[in-house]
Length: 166
Image 1 (cartoon, rainbow, N blue to C red):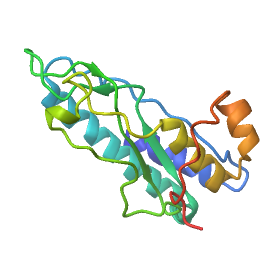
Image 2: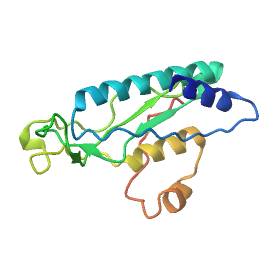
Image 3: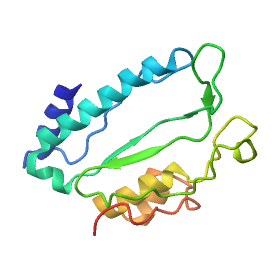
């Protein structure tokens, strides 16, 4: 995984290389044995990010990496040492172009009174807002394209500001 990150990073760093890459990592379905699965998966993400940084070299300073999931997990574990599909999730940013050191969004907590249907984290931020914030501030994608082409009919999800260094 570190090798893949390094190779992709070096391709992105090339003067005539691509400006955007999309990578997918499966294996996150943790219905059982979640602790072991997460340890392996998170180690792979860590190695990939280290590889990206190595492959990007000086280009790391101008890079934003966005990580997100397609669905969340329940707060409460199930009977097989895992968790089931949930609603709220997480997105994270890494790279030299990121205005780091901050958590964006609202964290209501995990007390049962704050959970959706007593099982899921409350969804407080639309992931489209995170993506729009990065695409607009980092790649210069205009608002109309974001709302009409990239995420059609998404005007309600405003780009999240303050994610990328100005």
